[in-house]
Length: 298
Image (cartoon, rainbow, N blue to C red):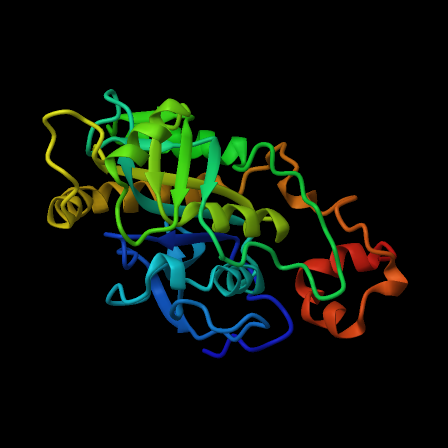
């Protein structure tokens, strides 16, 4: 299917970004691959669109099929834009993280409510080129969606930590021991390499967004613990892949309920550029996310 059209995918309300260990969504019926073109380049791979528990779902493997894209190489803007193009308004990401806290053991799930940015040089906004917007980001995750995500995982028997701070580092190397201790001193709970840009761009695209962080290791701060080894990380991820899929299915079933959140109006009062100063080329490029504001006179 060609996703290179001006209208949305119609009826696809729920999206899933799969991370390390979750490269495909088992249980999708009537699945088709949608190759997307965006104003910001190509997404990581084709979107897999199908039905899950009676709901239309779009899935994207964050690192591409075969895990071939580094965190620093990810085209976050294209990935989020593609979901928005398909009609998604609710998005859940699944990601591997290292634990910075004793009580968050490998195999546990964290649904964070805060972020610290330790990345550099990554494109984190759709705006620029003649238009300036400053969206609120004090609370970077959708609270009602996060609560639903935590409750869904808990109902399946998972050990879930609701709330916490996610440090997003550049990678692809893991932390030094000094960095790991520094992040703990800041009060951070888990560390990963991808969620920050996804959360920022989802907010600008007015999507409800939450993260299911799968703890795979204790990073390198814990005395007597083995340093992070990718083989051990992958073993924990594979053991929890089915849990992640079942959790996402439950969230998809409940995500259509009316929620009280401001995610879908995040651009209200955010654009500060005078309407007559916005270049037409920039308007055209951002028409997908500016459509609501343009109807209001932007």
